[in-house]
Amino acid sequence: MWANGQGDFTLSAEQIHVWSADLRATEAQVARLRQLLSADERARADRYRFPRHKRRYTVARGVLRQLLGQYLGVAPVDIVFHTTKYGKPYVKAQVSGQVLQFNVSHSYELALFALNLGRRIGIDVEHRRRVIDLESVANHFFSAAEIETLLAAPTHAKQQLFLNCWTRKEAYIKGLGEGLSHPLDTFEVSMKVGAPVCLLADYTDPTAPQRWQFYLLTPNMEYVAALAVEAKADERLQTVGAWQLSCWRWQ
Image (cartoon, one colour):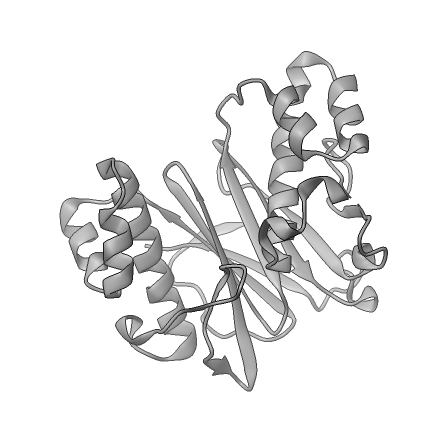
């Protein structure tokens, strides 16, 4: 599923492209990517206390600029980012008359980049580290049904269920682009291993499950990831073969 190489920078409305990037980089590589960043981005990188966090941000942002530059046909350094009132970044440039939608997530040493034309999209990746007191975290952020599912699971299965739920919820709210104004406990996602990956309910928007599609992503065995993309009811990814998900590793 995850192919090495430069991939394809031609997008259609029926396609979703997902790229992964290893955030471990040499000092020379980080320096080259830093040159692509804006003054504001460099200032943000410099505010990180620990060098590894500065490196991860610089590499992720630099790779994002390189990817967007390929799709938009412009120099990475010339890309101008704007932000919504909720802080979600976007670009005004279009591809074939459609807005290039993108979303980014990174955890530890891996970043994922999702791109699509004209459809809201969200992605989240989490390292398979052990979550301390996951039941307490779930009680604060999960819906009642999700909490019930987690508590009913055997101890050895709870970590995976928690990460499944968390990544899918994060992908959805990132796709919506509304930040924490859309509380995590106001909607419910599937989380059981082997069950279809989907939005089960949004208590603030009953039609949302018919308008959003989800993917389970496995970039490697150390990470869990999820992708959410807005799609009409008659474009459900499970039944419409025209939809394509392509994944590559950025090198």
